[in-house]
Structure formats: structure tokens, C-alpha cells
Length: 90
Image (cartoon, rainbow, N blue to C red):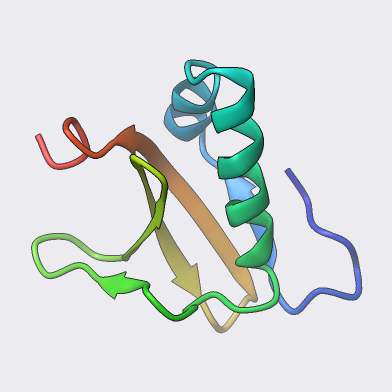
């Protein structure tokens, strides 16, 4: 998933995150996708949490958690997992 050229960052879904995104119901899918797209303009939005156990950040989208890494130097954001909150940290 590439973001528009006018956005500050390019957002990439890594294969495990793409697989995760194939699972939710359509309404939840669109909610998650909207949240992911907002990262292009603000990779550290209000409510994002820097992870302590592993490198990266987490944002909420309903019952789902979007786990991602930011490469400020290249302007890339890598979404590496999209999990239901009950499964996100196992």
C-alpha cells in the first residue's frame, strides 16, 4: 500500500500484516485501513504508544491493534502486525 505523493510518509504493509488485514469483517477492515492511512501524515498520532518490549509503536483501531515501525530517515512506515487486542501481544 503506497500513500499519495503529497503525504509525509509512505506506508507499507508487510506480508504478515496484509494477512492479518484479510481476516476482519468488512466494516472493521475499512476502519483499520482508514487508521493506517492517517499514519502517512502523522506517524505518531495522539494515542500512539511506543512499545517497550520490541521496537515500534502501537495504535488502536477499535478492538484491533496496529503495530508498526517508523523509519524517519527514509520517510517509511512499516506495518508489521494488525491483531485483535486479545491476540496482539502473544
